[in-house]
Amino acid sequence: MDIDRTELDRLVAARGGPGGEYRVARVFEELIEPHVDEISWDAMGNVVATSRSDGPNEDDSDEEGEEIMLAAHTDELAFLIDGITDDGLCSFSMLGGHYRGYLLGQHVRVGPDAVPGVIGAKPRHFMDDEEKAALPETLHIDLGARSRDEVAALNVEPGDQATWDRELTDLANGRLTGRALDDRIALAILVAVARAADPDRTVHYVATVQEEVGLRGARAAVHEIDPDVAIALEIFPTDDYPTDGDRSVDVELGSGPVVELGDGTSEYLFGGVLVDRQTLEWLKRAGETADVSLQHDLMIGGTTDATEFQSAGRGRHAGAIAVPCRYTHSPVELIDLADAEETADVLAAALESPFPERTDVRGRR
Image (cartoon, rainbow, N blue to C red; front, side, top):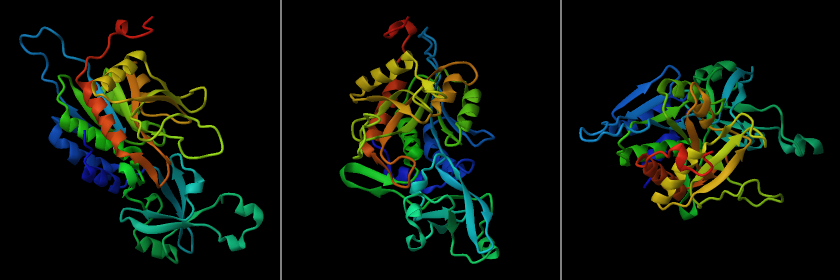
């Protein structure tokens, strides 16, 4: 299933860190609206686009199938401007799981008018050997302003956000790089699936907020929707870049979507999700139906919205399917577009497939 490149470009171009996702949400709403029956927003900014089942035919005694929720998050890693110095530099706090090494020498866009700025550091000419080997603790965003008043004149103030100044770039072999592919590629997949699928069940295509700072939007959305099955669409960090150490995971670009077995904040899978067997079987069978090879792995050191989907309110079936991504949580996240298109194929097949009964899966007891 093709991912519309123009749609993906629009989703990436719309900027929005945690708590400031509304521009992204509006683009998602506009793109998916022709393919669903109704759209609603909640107070947090989650967007719920619902395709209603017509229910069973008059001659069909079977009940309507499970209510399904497919969700991707709208927020990207960002910086919160928390102060302005007398000489016009912006101090900031990090929103989401940044690696400080990615910050140095980067271009950013700041505030509602996307004012250009840069993140610099002390020149190496003034560093001692210890400083040269370490990452600086104190960094600022430089807008070129010379005073607080000049920053204010640029319509930038504390409370505004900054995001990487990177858009999408085409690389060889159908691969793309840029900022915010986590999780804009997943939003583009949602739109593609809504456009192509016509299942005889109710499906909620949900754009959640504040995933990068604690799955907050997911918690609110799943309480409100209360589906039977909820799937998070994500990116999955690859470890296929040459290093001196052992690889942490076996996931590779170009080898198909990743169906997570589980995830968590440590090797003990604390604070994450363990995907139930019925959900795993459902996605596995969908991969076979779509003739798509799936990858399976655990994600260590992070979680997805599926954590909240599984246990918030009443318990429910929940899992995650992800697009392999190199250089995650950086300005140059890199994906293979074919992996994203196959992810859409698997989800479309799943929506047309029955959800397995407990007695119909391996290890049911």
